[in-house]
Length: 406
Image 1 (cartoon, rainbow, N blue to C red):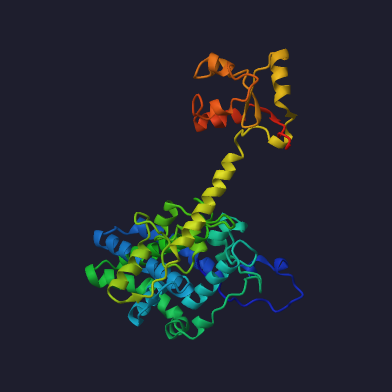
Image 2 (tube, rainbow, N blue to C red):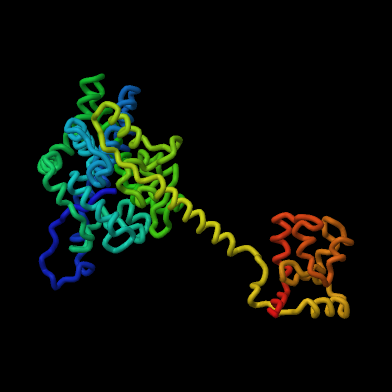
């Protein structure tokens, strides 16, 4: 999640990007913000008592600003997975600004590029470049000019809410990210220091890294529930950390779905928020991918897993690789060489090591030596279990020559 800032790059095209000094390739605005906020939080924790009211407010505002990103920037604007009334749009634009992760336009452009170019060099925060890079490295280091893949943002460019937020974003971020949470705690119960250190700065640190986990942890931890072509995965831990964005394999397969979690018991507060808003007419046109297609993806991945397990099992030698006998040859070999061979379904099985273990006793299995025991095996004497049928595949030694047509 997130987007890359359009930075001022050196105009000397003769200098390779990798050869530029490190100081010119670092995004200093991001670096200062991401380094200073944890340090300020630690200082506040060391010097300022935490009041219960401030702690509660910090948690509440964490969810508010987090939902501004997940429910607003991400699912509403980046993916158009539902529609929102103007009041809800304004609320989400302000809440998302309080998460201090760039404007809606800036953030959504990068995220759309991420989906279109997942796991490639054109992906702004490709998981292929490592966990640290996809989590925070891409924010600290400027991207090489032209490296980020194309993404259509024509719809974002004409949206009045997005245009206004983008134009005044620095003021929105400053006020909603730092001033507003401090004012609430200060005027509300007199805790100005706690409001700043905890509800503003510490809360921001948690919101930042919760969001960053969608780019990093969600591509490393969990299962490929619907497709394994790319790195996104599903895991409840990531979902818990990211306000429901952790069912990421589902999201990358069906990005226009307003849900990330499709089971009622899966943690997705963003889905619950959007759904609740719809009950009051604030959100509408909630998009859900067809269940039939979702189930197809699940079945296909289950089939892949089954095939992978099947490859580890002994299913017996390939019939094409086995020697061919006639029934007369089998009878003669068993009689003259005392071989313990039985024919079932035109396949010759050597049961030498199984005679003593036969659940029905030695006599019954020995009665079929050198003979076609298909009828007896399949119900004439006893209708053998699937386990027995699987077991005899490991005893294959040959096939019976098809009878010639007269």
